[in-house]
Image (cartoon, rainbow, N blue to C red; front, side, top):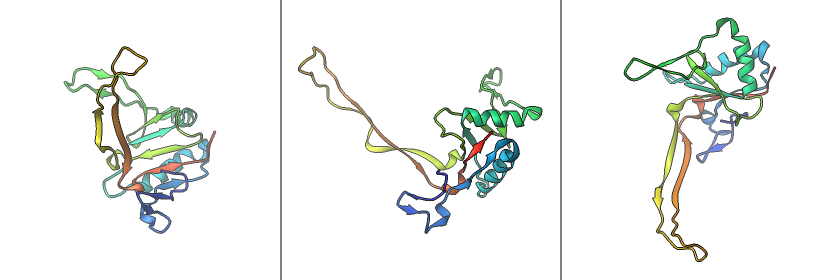
Amino acid sequence: VNDAGTGTVGNINSSTNTYWQNQKQQSVGSFASNGVDKMRAGYNSALYGSSRPDVIFTTEAVFGYYEKTMASNERYLTVTGPDGTGKLSFPHLAFKATPVLFDRACPSGTMYLLNSNHLFFEMGKGKDFVTTPFVRPENQDAKVAQILVYGNLVVDSRRTHCVLSGITA
């Protein structure tokens, strides 16, 4: 998911194969003025059949902008435990019943509307937590081994994801 929506991913050039572009809302500007409208437009553009974004990640600052605009309508979702008795404490804001969370690793001024049904983590063949043989280093009285894990995050439908960029206060 990138700001321009283009690029080559999985050997598919999205400039010539436009179906492979992710959705985008660029130069959002002031969140107070345009943010919720751009979220709505981005969310709706990422709908494909019954598939929709199911998680929204943004920066702490943008989360604060969203929280401020929603203060009068603020609702927190809670999750009931599997046995129906307790509540797991993980409140968050929601947009169209989609959790809105912040992550300090998000680039400044961005928001990602992601569809986890179209994101997968694939393990490398033969490298799914494989332990190498133990060896004794010449400078230690111990044996060591490596645990190898090769993996890749893959997407099967870029058009079901959206990015909002250029968000300011």
